[in-house]
Amino acid sequence: MPRRYAAPEGQVIQAFTFALDPTPDQAVQIARFFGARRKAFNWTLDQIRGDLEHFRETGESGTPPSFYSLRKRWNAEKGTVCVNADTGETWWIEVSKEVFADGVKGAVDGYWRWQKSRSGQIKGRRVGFPRFKKRGKDRDRFSFTTGTMRLEADRRHLTLPVLGTMRTHENTRRIERLIALDRAKILGVTVSRQGDRIIAAVRVAVARPQQADVAQPDSTVGVDVGVRRLATVATTNEVIGELANPNALEHRLKELRRLQRQRCRRTRGSRQYQTTATKITRLHSEVAYVRQHNIHVFTTALAKTHGVIVVEGLDAASLLQQKGLPGARSRRRGLSDAAMGEIRRQLRYKCPWYGSRLIEADRYFPSSKTCHACGHVQDIGWSEYWTCDECSSSHQRDDNAAINLARWASLGSVGAPVKRGAEHQTESHSAAGEDTRKGSPTPVGPNNSVRSAA
Ligand SMILES: [Zn+2]
Image (cartoon, rainbow, N blue to C red; front, side, top):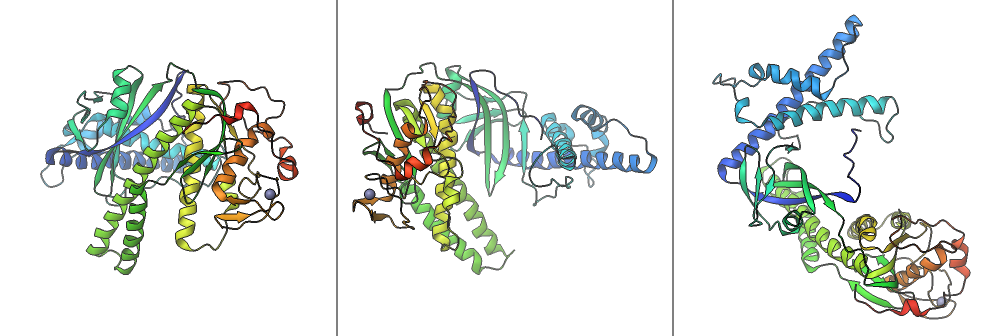
């Protein structure tokens, strides 16, 4: 893998995406840029392949492919490569050089990923030799890393090299504000096509907020992410907040299922199939926006408010996943797993910003099926409500899980000093597992009774 750009101390890198509303002229230009990136990518790949063949035949090894050497070669040859076959015109002049550089870089990076995967330097699935990109099969995109990249003060326009100022489909407030306050700096912009939408992903380095003070440093909460509601927030003895799945999301999920059934009935490749497929892509990205926005608002409020936040540990959700669930249900399960991952990811960087502490519970901690009243663990399947076999108290699944997670803070971090604003990850693999199952509920101290809306 190419090394990621490491953020300077005290900064994080975030990407903000916006749909664009280009003018017809700009749309044509963007389409040309997509093609131009592909051209440079394919040309570079061809050079690399040629060099490899030359090496195999003659045994003379040249210099290993590098971005700088290949970009130099490209610049020397683009005059003959970028010629319109019909008109004989050279067209490279109309395209930003950044777009070509991005294509060259893409091919070189692809080569090195393949090379490193072969030699076992990167883990995971084997990476194949990069393939030539075909129009229509390629994920159309290009990136800028230098040149004029600016979000305009009216919060409705993005200015990019060569393309000029483009209207954004949405308000850019979220990020323009940070830039105006000098808390964020643009590192690069990637423009891509998603269905029939043109999307700009603006990559920025964001400085941590200056005020690192949580509102209620003594408050400890557990956060359960569920299927019925997005999240439940509880202290060690009561539920203090619920985050419903937004209506906008519910509505779109329903529509999505309808369209997916419709697509199934249509002939693959037909125009009607394509129409439905385009609608599905658009809905998918809308679902992603709505979810992402909600989760951001939620995690910011949590990190600003509570001293200690406990969430499910890595993979806990997928471990509990049951096979053979009906389609709709497993999809929802998948959504909530993804939401958990995203909430955890955001809390990992937001908690240190505001001085709260994130605890990730042991992945085997049975937060849903442990009775919070007596500590008895029983199998509860998929039911939302259940009654404890031991003490007969009745529970709502998510409420019970959130309370148990809040208690994990004292169970899981026995002996560990509570350091505010310490390292983001405090995974605890102590012997708490056994205690959790059989132990008595944690006594509720004065610290834990703080009420707050998350
Ligand atoms: Zn019980």
